[in-house]
Length: 305
Image (cartoon, rainbow, N blue to C red; front, side):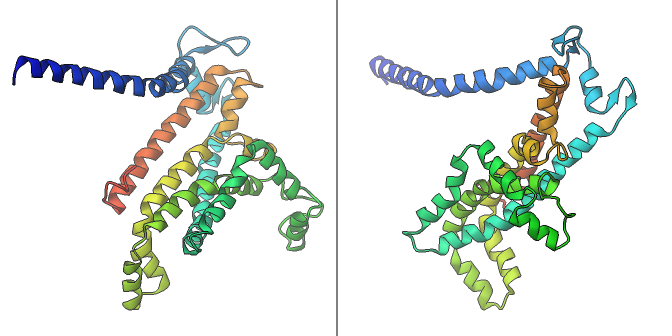
């Protein structure tokens, strides 16, 4: 190769590298400014001491993490632990219910005529275009005392007379399922579109029961969509603030509410930052667990998150 060709090739590599950097730079700057730097700031605040007005100050200490574990000047209290367990339970319950509801919806949309599928998907997505606070206020009105849903629950003996389904943990769960349902339906729909019906027909020809046919022929093929939807549902649900705050009425506080309260009413920024770090750790643990489950159940690269 002549020196001229080497010089031309070198200039081409430099040009491609410069073009790649200019293409990646806006996204990289956005991630650094709005994700990396705030996370670093929270990590720093979490190890500071709570000032007289809730502002973080020196010296560095682990007091915020002790308070998050329930240790205070009056001794140990399980309140924060209950909040963490309630967050985990609500996240698990809501995710399971979303999966149960989303599977038949996604399957039904794929069986519709092709011209109706965009309309059906639009019907699933359109409610999420409305502000989350407005949608939550709508559920507050639907579940309040004296509404048809509350009257039906009273007639069945599920709630006391003159009481409503709101505020309650049930209302929080219902709000979470409603809010995150589209995030599960869309990945499952994409998985059902690629479904190999020959495997399902083979299972039926071998006289497999519907449950066995689903588990051995349908579930493995829809596993990528299921795992993607689980990540999109479980992670934001774990740190949800608006729905527990409005539909829970103080009865279903989750970790997101605990963190927000420390930056507002309770004025304890280090404790709030420690709770935020716990949410980040839970996010990474959840992603790692989904990755391990994907490798174990699917084995293919398309399953691994």
